[in-house]
Image 1 (cartoon, rainbow, N blue to C red):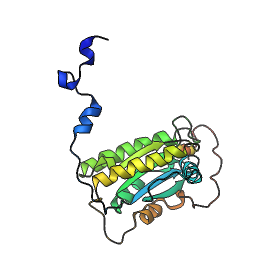
Image 2 (cartoon, rainbow, N blue to C red):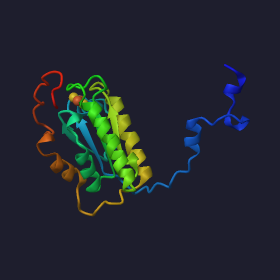
Image 3 (tube, protein in one colour):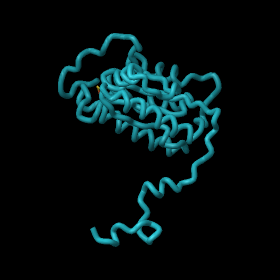
Image 4 (cartoon, protein in one colour):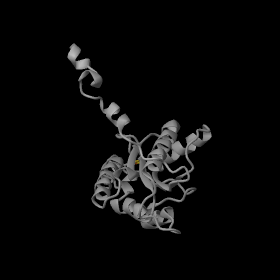
Length: 200
Ligand code: FES
């Protein structure tokens, strides 16, 4: 590699993106702020990964409230927006690894919808970082715990959702918006996927 290519920022080279991020001033975090975070979790992967994290006694924040889905492909833009509108400080979808969705493309659709919601939040003046998509397998208990911890720290940094209203449960509102799509926490597994093109 040419010597010029490895110059540091101090020597006149371009700053690495990580370095630029590290220099960004951070808002002071209110230590009393406990965010309400809704996780739309796929039954096949993230929900099972959460169970595994529990069995492994891995620590993750208690702020997260899970809603189990047969696949993240069931998640529509309106469901994510409803959770934010009802006051969730942060919302994320947790689906199977790309290429491993039991309905083939459900997790890809979910990622597109999350991206759309980020755009909508930015348009109304809310931080797009309040919504996210994570992918994991059922064997990734540690990834589940890391994602929950990372996202909770991010939301603590952002502060409370400015549209939060006292006495409104974002978790209940999100469940209601999902209707029959939301699975009972202790309910039976979803019907087996039936092949290519099957809708979750
Ligand atoms: Fe898990 Fe589709 S995201 S089955």
